[in-house]
Length: 314
Image (tube, rainbow, N blue to C red):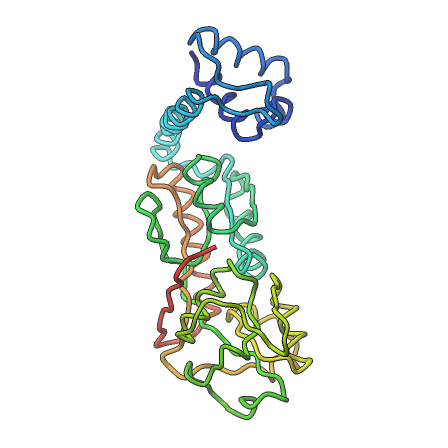
């Protein structure tokens, strides 16, 4: 039994396809298949049920895969220890960012990061929080940026910044003339929100102290994953919406005139860099945390912030 064989098993378990798994680990499909079969023969069991489409793990295979994850992670730790001892910041780093953060945060730090840490090969994905947690536990991600707290014992969180909520109020809305607004001014039935399952929606509904149902306006239910869509619908007089502060920085002057701040303390969300408690590649995580924190905290000049924690994150 070798670490390489276990890596091949994990790849097949993830992709449920030998060809795709071989592409991931950069070997030919016959080579991967031969090594997996060799391991099965050595153990005298079947890890995969090849008769199923897609391929499925056998019952014993499920247990083996869970143990293989631990073994592969621990083997990776050896190289990680050496890198940390040498002060080396480089190699592949798999990062995920949730959808309500990715479009605004990534352009703020990516160019600076790859220039400062040119030996790091970033692999960046947009994922929901539930997908991120699973991928961190499976060892398929090194770190992620998400709204916190998550309340997961095996996931460590290091806050990057606190991002205030801003109201986008069209001219036709009753709150348009207000210079500042308060949470109690919000009517949940007039709020245009992201589709159910977004942690930003949970944050907003916590501000409103309302139920988690999506708004029903003029006898329609709205499910949108785009802030831009919500802004356009608000402009059509269908309600108002709330936006994360960094998103408002990209709005044009006309749209900026419709932005209203909350009265202090400003309701906000906590955004953190998160990782598994195995602490692999911690030197890259800390470098990324330091750089992002410096950039974003310079852009968000709010004092007296009140954190609104979501009931769930995604």
